[in-house]
Length: 479
Ligand SMILES: Cc1cc2nc3c(=O)[nH]c(=O)nc-3n(C[C@H](O)[C@H](O)[C@H](O)COP(=O)(O)OP(=O)(O)OC[C@H]3O[C@@H](n4cnc5c(N)ncnc54)[C@H](O)[C@@H]3O)c2cc1C
Image 1 (cartoon, helix red, strand yellow):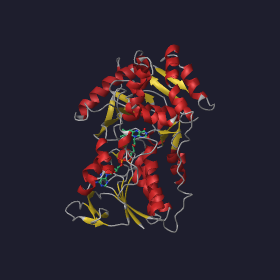
Image 2: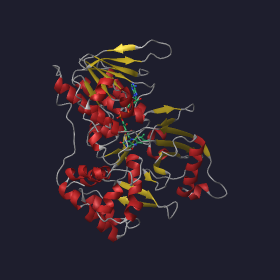
Image 3: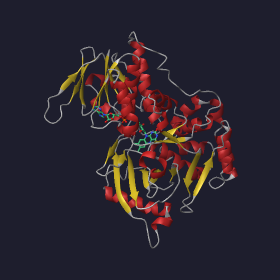
């Protein structure tokens, strides 16, 4: 059975990978000339990679880790020390750490929080702990119900002092969804805390050892194509053709550079495109169906990624850093963290600028200057004085619509992978799964789509064993 999948991001590739395992023939159709969607990367004229985003893998990503294992490339993840490191804005150039001892959860997390006295006072830690009690007792049901509040509203409701937000959760909100605590849904933070506090290595982080396109997406394509599937770049879906009964008849692929359009037909069809594109591509008759109408409530959030190459080493920290700057979110010196970008003498900082709504229309030069002004605070020793560091080159990648913006009330707009149209499915990190808008969410969504197809339209070779989906255990000890 042939399955046409629009979009070669992680969701589309994961769906195709698991469909090949189950005996189907996927045909992945990607509009751009690069694999990976939000993890896409390009080589510049010097041979250096620049990326759509700084990407971190967590211990709490079971489906991503299983996928990498199945591809035989799990050794490409470079695991870091189990710690969260925050810049201290009141003391430029210094850091505060949450070090997780190697003992079972939740004790490792509790000790990490209790031992950190730079950021939170004891009364603040106690108030925060008490605030989390309903989540601990009621579990995931409570976490989902809190989607009606922003994180700031939830903290106020739980009597948690506003300083806790300022010290820790502005940085966490920006890292998780590129927006601030007054905008982000409480469900997002509670879900992350749940994973981090419930799983011993949940918050342990890893960096890929090179560009995600080359080191992660290409092996997926090799896996798919060596088993009879197809992955086509420069193949943008232009229109979804319907039969009279509203099911999909074919995908019209736009002919590029003067070539004529082509119709790709298959037994089943998947959209693994971003939700913003899916909304535009929606066939008229489907707009009457409530399931598809709900997508109107979802929209991608803007974000900007910067990579800056310097003439010297700015730091030897081999870990992600939370900048706690109003302009920037997380960053890392990739010359330390990533084998493929390693340089013992010169730093290459990769930084996420968020919230980016006010910056997305500005020029690269304006964005660069504002970022350099922030870096003076993060690395005062290297930017101020007689011999300041020199910027050798930079790249700015703007994504006006990235992952869905997780404001309160979004959970009810996230669709299941199975749609009311019998031969049409959705995949993508915006679709309903437990891991929100993340790489793990994208991989899991693709797998859930493949599973749903295999269940509804079985073929002889279908193997449920290979498609085992790993969802976190839910019990009362959540969050
Ligand atoms: C700056 C940044 C930092 C991030 N950091 C992290 C992180 O640290 N950890 C983490 O887990 N996640 C992170 N994410 C989120 C993660 O990248 C995404 O959740 C995930 O990659 C989304 O995958 P997807 O397949 O659902 O969607 P996408 O990656 O958006 O894939 C959709 C694909 O569809 C294609 N497409 C669009 N239109 C068409 C068309 N007409 N026809 C055919 N194809 C089409 C697109 O080109 C794209 O390839 C980050 C994202 C960004 C932007």
